[in-house]
Amino acid sequence: MFMHADDPATQAWFVEDFVPEILDLVLSAWEGFARDPSLRLEQRITNSFSHALERAYEEQGKSWFIVPEMQRTDPKTGKEIVRHDIRFFHRDVSGQRLYFVFECKRLNVLNRRGKIVPNSAGYKAGLLKFVMNTYGGGHPCGGMIGYVMDGKAVSALITIKKLIRKNRGTLLLVPGSDFTFSPGVPYGETQHDRSDGRFVIYHLLLPMN
Image (cartoon, rainbow, N blue to C red):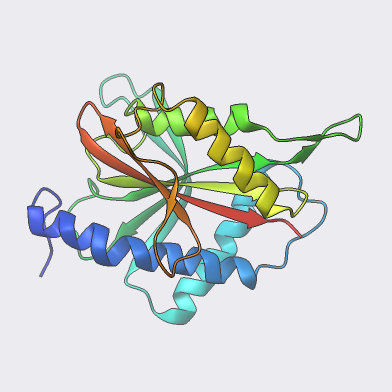
C-alpha cells in the first residue's frame, strides 16, 4: 500500500525511519568508495559517488532509489528553477512530492597557490538554499555533504561550527539551538525556523583521503 506524502504519519515515518536509513547508507557507502585522487571538482565527486550509492542500495535490497543532478523546473515555462545534487525517493510513497535532498560542497580546498581554503562561503550558500526554501520546500529536513578535500574532518567541523554560530540569524537557527550531534550517530544537525515551519539539516563531512 502506498503512503501519501501529505499524511502526518508519512511525514513522521520519513523523519524517524527513512532519513536515518539514508544517512547510514551514505556513510557506509563512502567507506567502501574508491576515491580517485584525480576527482577534485564537486560535481564529478558527486557523480562518481552516486554510482557507489546505487551499488550499495542494490546490494542491500533497498526499496528506494537515487537520482543525481536532478532538475526542478517551472511547470509552465519549462525553465530550470534549481538543480539538486542528490535526491532520494522511496517507492512506497505515492507521487514524487516527498523526497530527501543532499546539497554537496567541497571543504578545505587546495587552491592554485597551494593554500588550503576552508570554503565556508560555499557551504553557507548551500545552507541558504535550504533555509530560503529553494531546496526542500514543504519538507521536514534535508542534508549537506561536505567533501573534505584534505581529509582533515576535524578542521572542517570547526569551520562549519564557527560559520553556523556566526550566521545564526541569517540561517534562521532556532533560538537557543546550536550545531549538535545526536547520541551514537556520526553526523551533526541544525534546526531552522523557515517560513514553512521547522526544518532540520543533517551535516555529513566525508574525507577525500
